[in-house]
Amino acid sequence: MISQFNIDPKQFDTKQFESIFFAPARAYAALSVDFTEKLVNAQLDATKAYTDTGLAQVRNLLNVKDAEGLRSYLEGQQNVAKELTERLKGDAEKVVSLQQDFVQQSQKLAESNVKQAQEAATKTAK
Image 1: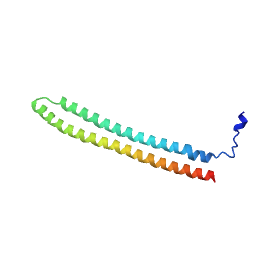
Image 2: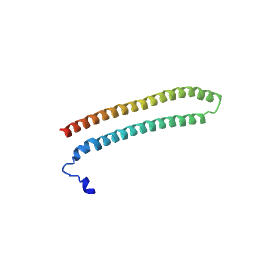
Image 3: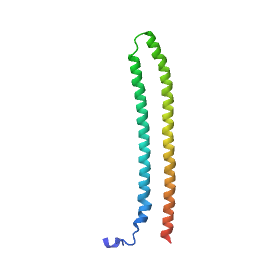
Image 4: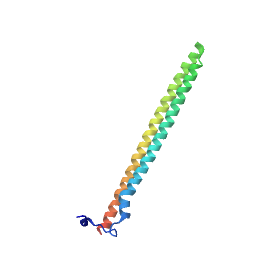
């Protein structure tokens, strides 16, 4: 029964198999890993910035010793809120940009892979 499925290694084109299946899979995996790395780094940067801001505010609050210090601290909170709002906006824009870039590169990769597969199919048919 197994003899029905004899495959002649001379007829099996590993280069074609590589170019149609494995190369595109590796390219997409590499693209995904790059995207993940950029996204994680952006998140780590944002987390560090937010943590540093929070700790700085706690330190400033610990330095309040009188009514004037409290007033100064509260006024500073408005600036901190404004800065955090701008930071959040920038971080969100960065993530959206990373996602858009990933989608565009994925589409280009898919188009390239389809084109290669069509060319390989055309060569095989001849």
